[in-house]
Image (cartoon, rainbow, N blue to C red; front, side):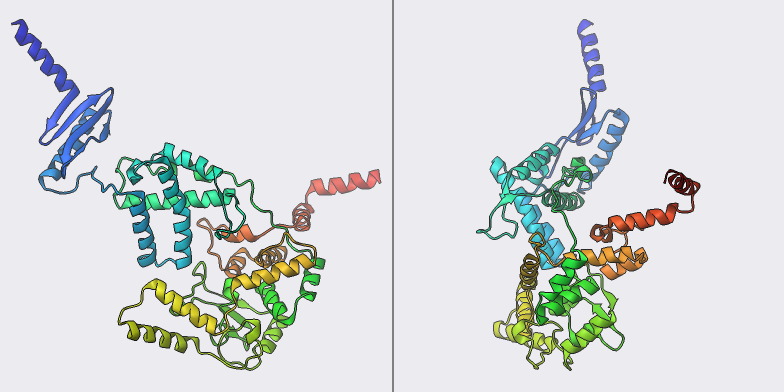
Length: 453
């Protein structure tokens, strides 16, 4: 009788610490229930929770999925980080149609993660990367030095805070993609989301100091005619250098209406950075300058390389592009890849006299040094000045964002326009005086000051 009683007690204890529903076994470890089953030859032990009834319901659902040969809740395809990166970049290239430049930036950012995994000597499976790995990866990024422009011969420096954040945000986006495609365990968190990236401060950002009115005057006086037309257009429209060099006379310039249009040209292999097209009114002096620059030309690039500036010839870029693409396909008998198509179209732009944005930047640096501002190394400072001047003039925030080509923030904020806007001390003072001048405290302070004077 004692033996029967012992067996009954043992079965009773097991019923409290484990159960079985078909092909799925549940067992208690500490205070947490786990499931145990095989799927596609793989042994799975997912963690369910502390509630036995909930664990039994999940076990029953998984058993039904196994019986119907359907993927279970906890099934996922475990792939390497390298394979994940390849799939994610392909998704951006063929589904989201991100620009090749954007894809290149994503590839460079995720290269750091692959190098880190290799340095750790582990297989680099995406599912194995935990929050602890992510934190150690941040430490790794803080310790390495890189060439800012990517050239192997350039002097190297540590990554800036913004660079570290961009890499981590890119990795977070890649693992979000992995989670949606069931390449991570369903019960696992995105390791980069757990870093709370929004709270990482940016403390070493390069300060932006706008040109003073006197410096700006001396800057333009030191330019030659070719440079002056370029930099005045950047200063008076706020467009990006990459947008300026891709402007076409017949499509983007309306001298009768006095409007400059910044538009996508996907068929020519170029698109606006944010895809946001916009129209910018031309102030009269700039319109008159562009009339002289065009000099009767009806098509082709608005701004061309210096050696093309006196050339009256005109190139129809779209006709030239169609010819080049057709010629290549007929010669090879193969369809164009996206990368090859981009290279051929880039050659068409070059033949038409395209100015490389780097050439604009080098000219800007040379002129900035001449006025005693060697810290100014990018013509994008004119874009910052443009946004700041719009704020100084109390231009409506919606119009400011439209002129800058930025989308309005999710909650109606300025979004990126706020990043480019730098409030001057005088503007703050004027706005504060305007707001406070009608208050009793303001008048009381005036009266007190008069008595003391």
